[in-house]
Structure formats: C-alpha cells, structure tokens
Amino acid sequence: MAHLPQKPITLLAIETSCDETGVAIVHKENDRVTVVAQQLASQIDVHAVTGGVVPEIAAREHVTALQVMLRSLLTENKIAPAGLNGIAVTVGPGLQPALAVGVSAARALSYAWRLPLIPVQHLEGHIYSALLEGERVFPALALIVSGGHTQLISVTGHVTYEVVGSTKDDAAGEAFDKVARLLGLPYPGGPHLSELAQTGNPTAFFFTRPLLHSGDFNFSFSGLKTAVLYAWRDLSPEHQKKQRADMAASFEQTVVDTLVGKTQQAIAQLNPNVLLLAGGVAANTKLRQELATMAANVNIPLRIAPHRLTGDNATMIGQAGVFAYEQGRRASWQDIDAHARLPITSFQ
Ligand code: KG4
Ligand code: ZN
Image 1 (cartoon, protein in one colour):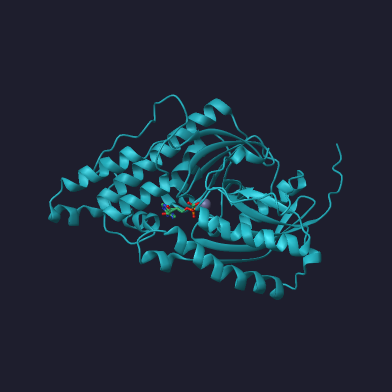
Image 2: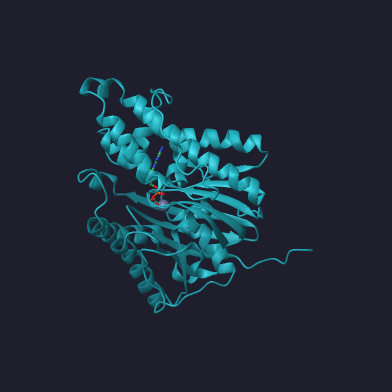
C-alpha cells in the first residue's frame, strides 16, 4: 500500500518533570523526525547541596530557567508562533510543583498564540528517545529505567502502550541513588556508583536477584537496598574503605542481572520485533553491554537511546509529541493539568 504524504509538523516541546529544564523544536516530515533546536538546563549543582531533589526548589529553578530558554530558543532559531503546529508538554508523572511550571507556561503560550497543546506522558518521551526515526518496529518491548520508574512496556503501535511489568516499590535509579548515598558518594548517585563499580569485584558480595522467578514481569528494588545496607553495616570501617568498590559492583551486577533476566523472560512470552532501552539508568555501561549480549543471544534487534538523550530532556517529549499529534491528540489550554501520577495509557 502506498503511503500518502503526511503534512509536516513542527512542535515546541517543554519538559520540567524533575530536575532538568528542557525546551526543543521538533519537526516531522513524512517519516523523518528532526530536532531543529534544543536546550537543556540541569539543576544538579543546586540539588547536590541538599543531596537530593527538593520539589519546591526544582520548581523555582524551572521558573527562572524556562522563560530565558524559551525566548532564546525561539529567537535564535527565528521561530515564530505561526511556524508551529502546537506545543507538546510533559504533564506527568513527576514532581507536582516542577511539572506545574512547564504546564503553566505551555498553557499561557497556547492561549496567547492560539496553538493546541499535546499533553505527553514523561515515559512516552523516554520510549521515543530510543525510537529516533519512529520506524515501524511494532510490537516493540521497552525497558524504561529511570529515577522514578522501572517498567516493561509493550509498544503496540505509535503512542499505544500496554504496561507489562512495573516496580512494586523503588525504581532502579532510586536504588542506585540510595545505595550511592550509603557508600558516601555525591548526588546524583547513579553515575558515581557505576564509575566506582568499574574498579570493584561484582561477585564479592551476593544479593538475591529480586523477583527474578516470580512468574510475572514486575520488579522490586527496596529489599535489595536494605540487603546492601545490612551487608555494609556488617563491615568494619577498615573493610568498608577497602570494599567500597566491591559493594558498588556487586549491587550493580544484581540490578543488571534482574533487569536483563526479566526482560529476557518478557521477550520469550511476548515475542516483540525490537527491544528498546531508555531512561536515566540506560546510561549505565554494564546494563547497556549485558542487555546487548542477551539481545544478540535471543536474536532481537536492540535500540538504545543515545547517551545525550537518556536523561530527561525536551527533545524526547517533542519526538513523542509529533507522533501523538499525528494520531490526533490535542488539548486546549483549559483542559490540561499537571499530574504527579499518570499512567502511560492515559491518552489512548
Ligand atoms: O530519566 P532520569 O533522568 O529522570 C527520571 O525520570 O527519573 O533518570 C535519572 C536516574 C537517577 O536515579 C540517576 O542516578 C540514574 O538515572 N542514572 C544512572 C546512571 N546515570 C543516571 N544510574 C546508573 N548508572 C548510570 N550511569
Ligand atoms: Zn525521566
């Protein structure tokens, strides 16, 4: 069947769900998605002082950064409102005060410029960061591992999802951050812990792979975090010093084995065409390597979000947004709100 040419789409995208302020312009023409421009402002330095994200401080930082970034994005790229088809914005899940800043800005611009809004669920963005050209790879299985979420999602078509498994408690990134803090590493803990783990022995300590044989595709990382805490407390200060890297490596190995093992089980049951990996923890080298090895063994193509798009950003919100727009997703400025909790299936 011949494809009818589709109308080109250009969207402004805004992301403020946690501690990164992101704005982007994304364009889709036929099957090509291009990033016209993007900007990202990280709040890492601000939150490093408190050792974690304080939602009200994150919101205040978004307010300061967003206005300046929007102005420079549009003027530097000579984008006028008339050149846009709509505004894609993350409406949830995330930190309510932080989300509210992006949503309010999008509503104001939508009203002033008479442009439709395209509400985007944050994890849709992560999924599309691994689906850069939006090829037709469906059904795809996405492993989303971030600071707030750990989910296996079946992507059955563009912006159409089925949640296959979720964490029952802590997300993988959250466990990385908490264990990093226990080991005395600075915020954000995940990247620091994984760097330290490279010099450690991953078999020095054994932790049970949580829920690996539970018969479903759910995850749980809270018990693992406690197991690491007890093992760490049992060590003398001298051994803690000597075995810090071993503890980091053993913890990391446990998380990676669990994520890879569950994903392999889901592939066997669901038989997807492609495996996707995205979210902040997708930056983890061991996870990338071991997932790639498993995917090669079971003969499934693997797409991993490029490094620069694993963390939160607005490019991925625009990428999901253009496909959502094409499927007819629209909202007016009166109709959208920020939602700290929001299932990925909310708009289908
Ligand atoms: O997707 P993301 O930027 O924000 C959320 O939506 O949560 O993910 C952030 C999470 C943090 O927990 C951070 O520690 C973790 O991703 N992370 C990593 C690595 N880089 C970031 N965890 C393990 N290894 C890494 N290299
Ligand atoms: Zn995220």
